[in-house]
View 1 (cartoon, rainbow, N blue to C red):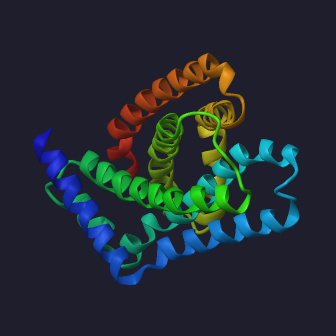
View 2 (cartoon, rainbow, N blue to C red; view 1 turned 120 degrees about the vertical axis):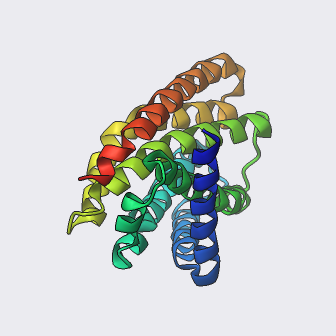
Length: 227
């Protein structure tokens, strides 16, 4: 397991260093997030209390679609340079490739959330009723499950000529349970904190989903590389 983790960290470092030099993926994700937030801020009156109810959904719309932009490109670089075949024949555990890609995708989406969520709150003049720590936990749980499955399916669809269209189609049905839980828990924490017990129930569901699907994707990833 130590060797798998070490190899995964090397792959993650390579991806993040490459992204640091080019800034292609993160810039696209951040620009998309900013456009969504600014568009909604002009479309709705921040002073209208009913608008506050859509903020939990907006957080996850930004997360999902910016995440898909990143996931679609996570394996394209390897395919363009034919380095994915090199990873396949290299004497490394295929699970380490999945773990490395998962970590890099996860960190990029978290970075987008760090920028986008405060910007959303500022433009809508929104004050959190619950604890910020609980919101962070929900964001981490929801993003973990989304990226776990997303990384697996991005690799599966990478060989398709229409991979950018195929990924959302196969991804949304699979991640819908964790996304529903994320939206509901976020809504309770932000605007309905008196029902916090329900939020904990949703968080337990998300944690169970994360664990089950991460293990499944981790184990089955070697078969995806052979497709």
